[in-house]
Image (cartoon, rainbow, N blue to C red; front, side, top):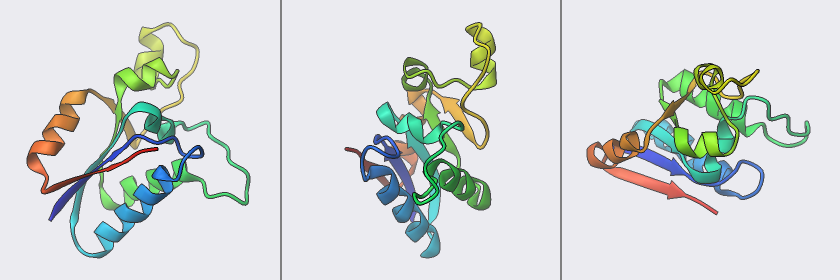
Length: 130
């Protein structure tokens, strides 16, 4: 089966991010295809490369990056939600005249059209939110 995940919860405010990550790992372990993870609303904070949680907590941003890289899973971040929350990649930072960026590969800024496409081509679109 082809799955996609819609994640709308911030990494350390709710259980959504951790649950979605565990679900993604289970999908891949069962031999299914994870087409993409789409980060929306406060879920875009899962792509913040500057996140530095305490050592006794899981580093969810790094965990998502590893999952995306190791399993070739696109990690798509809603550009409108990200910009609204101050999360920019290098291209958007330059375009908006900002000195730095906080989103980098394997995360990519995309539009809501990507989410619609996932809903159309996947067998299951599973949502995790607060």
